[in-house]
Length: 171
Image 1: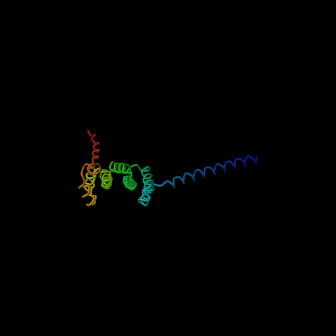
Image 2: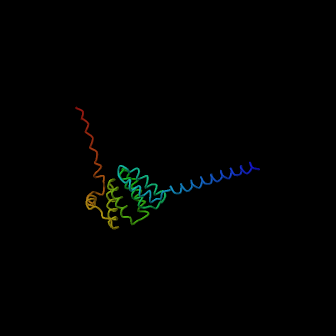
Image 3: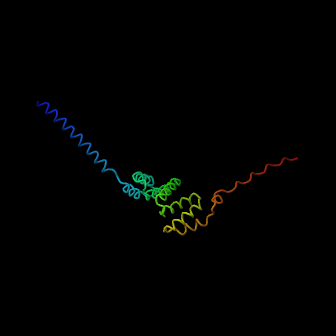
């Protein structure tokens, strides 16, 4: 009889230890889970050209937790500008504007990217929208954009020179 009670006791202790380990693991996983706001704040701390990848990673984690986190899209867009990944930056600013059409900062930031891409009309429109939403637009930047032609081809593309004429054969 003594061995049966000892065997049951061992199984009970093992079962209790397993339950305790599972409980502690679950508590640790829950406690370790950072919030979207914490990832966002870490992204802000990493916000510099040198740490752009880390900032993007943290903003992406914040967005994964909270897909409607407008500020995270806007800030990740800025980090993409630092990496010269303009299409990704525009996509993030578009998403920020989609989620909050009154986000003047996103319009202003998208205007900057559009100016880099030679999309001067779009840059002008976004700057005007940002101003209408109360964003103080840099007057020098606005002057430069206003002075640029609508068609960037006149700046970036010049017609190819005519090919030289072939020498005429002598008669």
